[in-house]
Length: 165
Image (cartoon, rainbow, N blue to C red; front, side):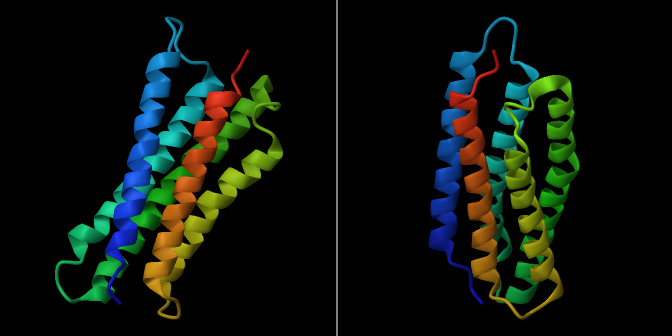
């Protein structure tokens, strides 16, 4: 099935806006001491998720130039799967490490489960797109991109309002 390019454009624009606002946040809140470890983690998660949504919304424009939709969806799904796997390898361990360092109040277990759950859901859904033809690839792919937007938005709000003392 042909993708909904209007949805990809909208998701890419929203992700670019989040990236732009986070760059302003980073520039205005940076001190000579740099960022604390929790703030550094949140900024990394924010940029990872926003760039995931942005690049994930651009990839279909590159691969859907011919009429072989199955191969194009397979390429998009593999890229999404690999990107989410990298996030699952990096971010849950970092957050648990920060909790062990005494930042459990900034990273409650509910937040850990929420953020890890989003990465896991994106990974599982992208694997479903690779392994089965039972689902509508366009809707699931867009849902995964929206999950990245949600994750980056939560990280942005938390970085903006929940500062480390």
